[in-house]
Amino acid sequence: MNVLIVSPAFPPFSGVGGMRMGSLSKFLRDKGVNVRVLRNNPVLWGKQNLKAEVPNDIKITDINANKNFFGNGILYFEEVRKVLENESVDLIIYSVGPFYTLLTSYLISKKYPQKHIIDFRDLWSYEKRGSRGFTKNIKFSIMKSLYRVIEKPAVNNSDGIVVVTPGDFDIMSRKYKNKKEKIQVILNGYEEIDFDENDKSNVDNAIQLVSLGKLGYYAPHLAKELFSALEEIKIEGLDIELIHVGPKEEAIESILSSINDFRYECTGYVDYKKGLKIAYESDIAIIVYNHPTGYGTKIFDYIACNKPIILVTEEANDLKELVSKLKNGFVCKNKSQIKDSINYIYKNNVKTLDDKIIRNKYSRNNQNELYYNHIIKMHNKV
Image (cartoon, rainbow, N blue to C red; front, side, top):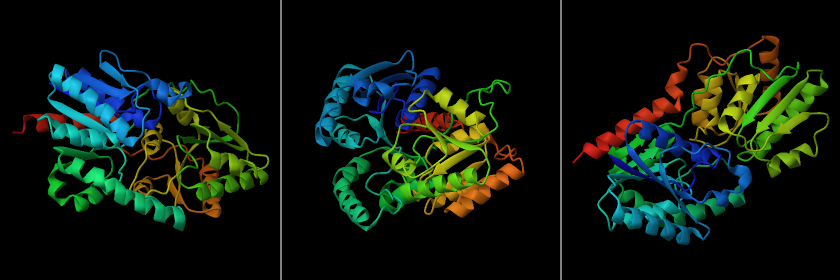
């Protein structure tokens, strides 16, 4: 079987956007599937963002997608067309975002018979973000109306839709009722990496908190509540530090300008194994998130490391439900609740998230197996 993956975000790009298709491509390869990939030229992401391992034995073509939305969609259309004209392809997977591959998928579907899946790593025209203020909310609502001009024909011409959360499934099922039977939920997950219990570099006595990926991007006001809580805890005599494994953020830099005597480190992008090791060695895992239906990806990494989780949110209802089900998952929305949770974890010597959780269910390997079965079913269906 020959599968073409169209994924602008792909290793060595080390953002979370590249991990899903990078992991799936390796899994399919190991299952004997012939995998072909079209990706953005890595130089477009910036050298500092190229930390991920590139899968071996997969043919990859780089696209210089440095034009506007429509220009990039056409660039990918031309490259997909070249592949289809010269190679055998049974199925195409389009990864979005970036969302210009939706335009590509629609144009290709009008000219070529190959079945294709659109993988919505994030929703686009029907995405529900947490509130960002009246003006930004109005602007976003207008933009979503424009997005639908491209999204609707792409989705209606697709053979399958994959989303990453049950909440996204509910939204897309309501908006595309004629496609409901073709929408599949396949979660993100964690890569299975083993760590030696004795191989721990964090040897000081400070309580170490970790945040993988974005920290203040989704809800700067909630990040401020977090930092205020940590500052007060430090003043009250508890040695505490926060390691942010990800790029610097303007929102966090702004908060730090008003914070005194608090240990904060931002590592920048690191490779996945190193980032997971930092989480594994930490005492408490932090999520600041306000997306109503999203899970993000760090939740799965924290589950893999079995670390107590503090979720700071007002509107992340689906993620709140997931975290609340875990024995040592704490949901907070203000400084007081954050302080109470940290103090509880410290005073009760809480070390794990939930020893009864079936962690393997949330592994990328498990989710990739679901993806593989979905692909085979689509391929065999007449």
